[in-house]
Image (cartoon, rainbow, N blue to C red; front, side):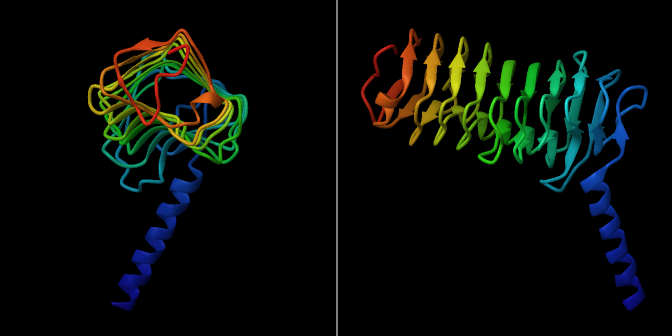
Length: 247
């Protein structure tokens, strides 16, 4: 029995090491589940990664690389993170559709100046999440985030991010800006058909321009005077504060 437990423990350590590091890929080297992209990479096929660990990534993005998804799909089975930007800078991922993870796309650990764009993200707990510990200057552009059980686009607690030309619907909250500061959201559409179009509580100095907030609830607290609202429209019910100017 002691030998059996030792073998199981060794196997678990090997699994953790594999999840934490993965293998380098990109360029002419195809990427598999858990790999880290270290060179510009054009995706050439769909990839399915059956992850059960909620912290395990399917694809880790390296510093300064460009990943061209070419409309292929990265698919999970309910756990893990689809695309992870962890402490990297100046990377770009476009055209890679992501479905079936705990979090579809996550930026954390000081990640700054990165771009995730031109993709569908659906069927997760959170679709796209920028953690409070992420760096500044990340952009979510031309992304559709839908049918997520939690937030479609979650910037809760982060600073100086950009969301543009994006659409989110059929999420519990389509855009989460709680505790967010100095962030720009423009030319996007957020539906509250499953609950809330936007949460913006304890947030400060955000620029919200030329968006549509449709159906459901817009939860905005009395920090609205801190923000810049320009030519937004919609049919959501604003609670906690009156309609701000420019809404």
